[in-house]
Image 1 (cartoon, helix red, strand yellow):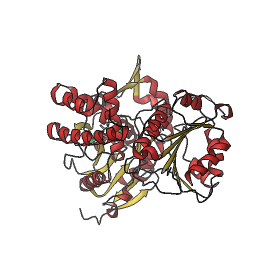
Image 2 (image 1 turned 60 degrees about the vertical axis):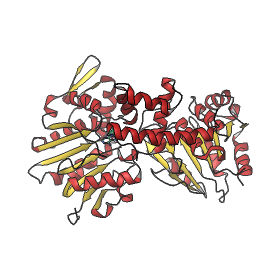
Image 3 (image 1 turned 90 degrees about the horizontal axis):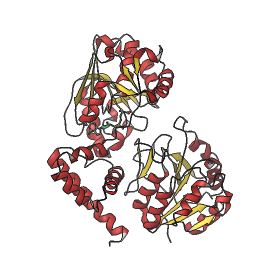
Image 4 (image 1 turned 135 degrees about the vertical axis):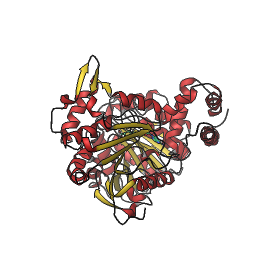
Length: 282
Length: 187
Ligand SMILES: C[S@@+](CC[C@H](N)C(=O)[O-])C[C@H]1O[C@@H](n2cnc3c(N)ncnc32)[C@H](O)[C@@H]1O
């Protein structure tokens, strides 16, 4: 038996090795995700399966077909909701929509969209503002399984009360029930919301520029990345935005501590909405 | 023993318990304190501001990627889990609730144990659930020092009692005693 400290050292070494291997074999790069979190997820998985070490888990990942999907699920936290932090959507509506309105055609990129709740939240907002028909919405995530759910736009009815409240707080103009029909335990969002949305697999760490867009919404994804990776991904965002384009992050994510900060001005400090300046070098 | 950090978990009744501890710590108390207090996901981040007015210590809501500094008290923001990295920075996540809670005390304590090992003090205060009990076990496992509020003196005794029932609590103290005790062992 190892002492707790020794065992912890061994686990850290095994974990580094595990992520190298996953990157080389499956192409998913977790090497620069914040350690405490991914380590906790992996150790929980080991406990659940009754395994003794990360090395045992590694063996399964390499040799059991389909097993990697489970690890991908453990490491991609797909927790999301509609109008999470309604103030963010209110600020988009009040500060950003009037500017977007001046463009003939609007492209929006939701990066790390999980099961799509955020995407439909913003699609509804665009409809209410009369901009949906001249918008193209790209919604991407690196986890193909959540994208399948996102495409369906079917969510548990148990959440609707909370979502309705969020919608109202976000400055929603209609009755939220106009946008879905309830069926048994589920609600299905209107087909018309999906028309201009393209769902696609995209990995922010390993893939390049996705499209040139007016607005990027990437919330609660950077929070899982270390500083180096945050710099890399915000660099990718900067390349993907038109000059004068907007970037909306999660409430605990801050562009201020990244290398690209001098290419942006702060539109809403609390809701973390930034505008790429027209003087940006990229 | 030279302790490098204190983690505190509290739930129902926790705000006034925290207030009493923090209010009574001297301005030169340098061991950093990291707190997870259960709050409703809808609440605004007022707690750090409120507590900061009472104390000579710097009390702030934890930011992602922030280095832990002496003389500082960090509080988990509503609706985020607070974790400690092994390089002694703070991080936040939006993972599922743990023990019906986000922030979860177990997540803070378990990651703190890995970072500070035997140089950590973990304290469980008043509360109506058993969040933090696994964390207390982990702190003990890594040689840290564990304290629970005397259940009879807690506004809600369930959470400290649950921690005590793990068999991993070193000291059971009333609120007033806790403050004096941590001052004596940290200075
Ligand atoms: C916590 S969810 C955030 C969902 C939504 N944006 C929100 O704020 O409610 C994080 C999402 O980021 C995705 N993700 C994590 N790493 C990624 C990467 N490297 N590339 C693309 N998506 C990633 C996960 O699969 C997950 O769906």
